[in-house]
Image (cartoon, rainbow, N blue to C red; front, side):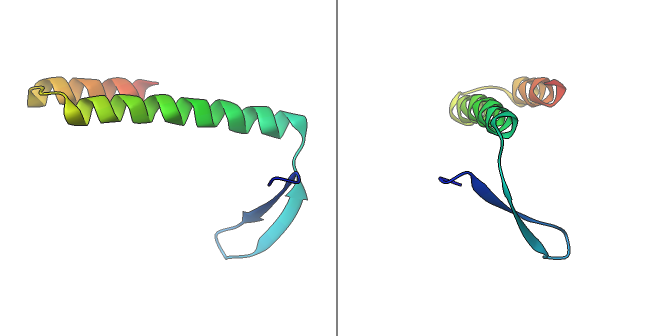
Length: 65
């Protein structure tokens, strides 16, 4: 990945390599950012002292995003 080549694997285990373009890079950066934000929320949910109903509401809010 450091050199712009990534390996894809399908459900059958077949691997292919391809060079990523600028659009791929931006999409991956956006996805990484969104995942980091979700992790922050999940960490907060896990460490805060919330009621079960509040935790359920917060999890459902994550699913809506």
